[in-house]
Length: 446
Image (cartoon, rainbow, N blue to C red):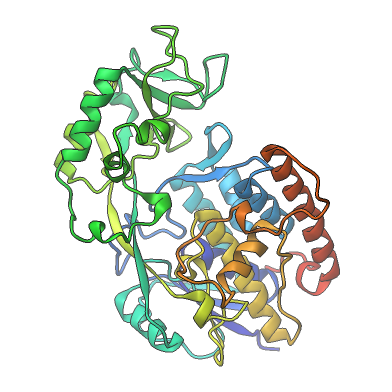
């Protein structure tokens, strides 16, 4: 019997996860990725699942929304989360990865599934048949216009930013110290560049007055909150970034034995520790200004940059008003997945690809689609992103503000409340998966 076929457009996180999940269920997939034939403003390689901004998948704490989402993905058999965990680099309580190794592992998983055919070619029109468009927030202009025409609404957009990456061999380790916040042993997964009050104020003054690549667009207010450039955060007040990315709480400078006035944290980009990311320093400064300003950071005076920070416009659709509860465009066999739906974040993109695969499989098999419990991290996000009552839709990460309140009426601390949210979510998802062996009961089919 001929295999059923699905076309997946986009070889990023959502598309790669979607393709693997469909193949695991015996569905043939034609996976289109336009790179390296056609590049984008943010990508640097032609590999699948390239991470274009941070290399962090955020917290692993079960009692955080980000950590709970990872637990949910494990329960549902995510392929890419497994790749991320195998490509992990030290990052304290977060899951951060070696970008190159992560992409290699994803490509290895895709290649191990004969039902997946990878085509490196730009898609400029909506393919026939069952389709998942996971072309990311940097969907090519030709395909983006076709998607917008199909959904019958207006595209929305926001600016997204990436932080610089520096060469570890050019850092001054006599000044930098290794420690994770609140680590009494003064060893940890982050490098810290301490600043005194005078150094901090001089740095902030240089940061807010440095030349930027774009001015007018950013002043229009279309910056995504979670990816605000450091200079924009600093512009809101001289101490704003000192209570954010540069907060010194939980750190002790071994040279002084005291907490610094402020600190820049650097996180490893790869397992060898040869490259470091300036945590929280997404930026839109010109490359020359980045070199000048970021070399004011103690320990980075001679830093060489593997990659400067960049900023680009991302596009997403008004999902609550143009997609159904499965992110399908009503009246079509086309489903969207990933950041083009406005579900923002790496792990969220993986979850979106998994969900698109399950619902597309359900369509092909004539069975009920997925209805994730709204008590869960991703179930709550999906409910928010597909609720027509949602107004002023903007990109959204998983967060506990989206889940229903606890029903027992007990007064709890924030940590106790989040732990209770997570436990409830895990129990509800386990029960749901057990009730759907038609979706979750099969092992990998390769």
